[in-house]
Image (tube, rainbow, N blue to C red; front, side, top):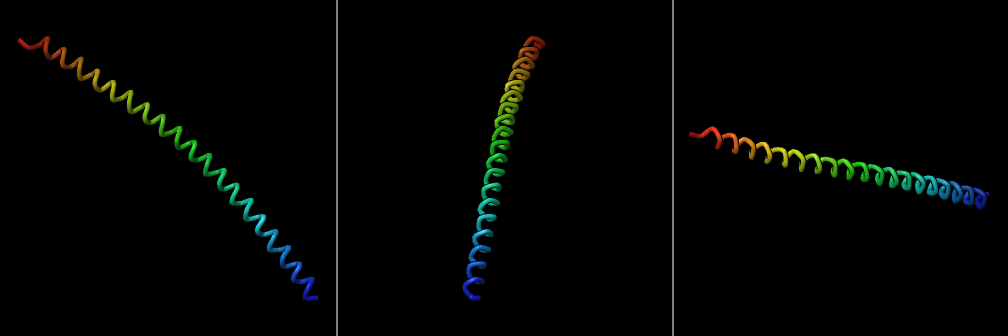
Length: 72
């Protein structure tokens, strides 16, 4: 009787460990997907930042040119 209970216990532990491994692998895959999405968002934000910064410099240059034309 004891041997059967022990075997059942080992099977139960093994099954639970297999479930845990599967959960960890799913979690790892989800984290990798989230990291990829965040990286893409970061690249998009950097590109938008660069575009806004370029527009800022261009607007300042135009404003300076107009100001120079308006000076007596």
